[in-house]
Amino acid sequence: MKKHYRYVGMFVVILLISVLGGYMYREAYSKFPTETFIKRHMVNQNGTLATYLKESNQADSDFVQGREALSETVGIWMQYALAKEDRLLFEESYEILTNYFLQPDGLVYWKLDSSGDVHVSTNAAVDDLRVIVALYKASDLWGSESYLKTAKVIEDYLVSQNDLDGYLTDFYDSKLKVTSDRVTISYIDSVALTTMVKKNAINVELYRSMIGLLIEVPVQNGFYAKSYHVPTKQYHFDEEINMIDQVLVALHLANIGVDTDEFLHFLKEEFKQDGRIYGRYHLETRTPTVNYESPALYGFAILYCLEVGENEFAQALYKRMTKFRVGNWFSTYYGAYSISQNQDTHIFDSVVPMLAEQIMYQSGYIK
Image 1 (cartoon, rainbow, N blue to C red):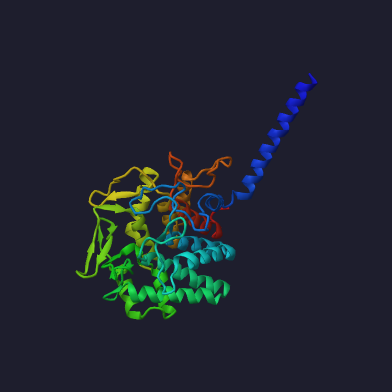
Image 2: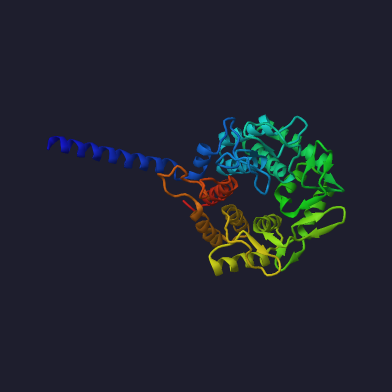
């Protein structure tokens, strides 16, 4: 009988330790669990941030596979560190940028393999702009000359190589010496461009050309055009509308005070009707063409709503967004967004919500 009680006692102690340990884990990481998840599971051995949780040799629609690292992720991680005012976190991203992505001439490769090796020869203007403005903001916040110097190196390369007839196009191929002939409208980062013209990093003519493209973007059936073809001076609409593109265009317009009420009305009505916003819609029918939702879409939509003063709608979107986050603090993937059935996820669906949540937190809309 005594032996039986001893085993019961040991079981109770183990149970208490497990519960207490889990509670302490939750308390330590529940405030920013997505950041913790990424640091634990999405960092390659060299410190770069992996695009997917799992290794894979199969590329997605954006031609990214497995643990490859993107300059896009570096820029968003920098934005997150700035929102959090976490200099150590920002400095870690800066070192990854300068040690792996950035070349001496200012070229920032848009992706690397998991070992940090380069197999591409192009930059991505949208990612460069995000990094440049983050470096300027970090310099203003922490007074680092190295951030300023790096921003200048990148912007000099961007302006000299991506400029086609007075427009910053999507990419430049350093191997083929070819500049893209298109400007994706959602890539026109009005905050970055405004910052750069104030810093005399770009001339007024280039600024006006790019902002003009953004302001004059045509709207069809409530949706913004996808891109602008520089040689023919024509805007182009996709038949299937990518809602992340749409929200980013609206955000960039709102950042410079341009009215976006028609698009905002569509978002609110769609959310009111279904309690969700789908990833893609048909241009003509305005009906969803897919049945999936995107945490990244909700993250950008939150930033847009905060910009236009739709704080209650932002909170409703936040509530919906976090339904895609793993909330079980005993789970290996606690804090991750959109873990698939095969236990994989794309980092974009975690870093964008993480950024939106941090800005909501800093603004006092969530605790």
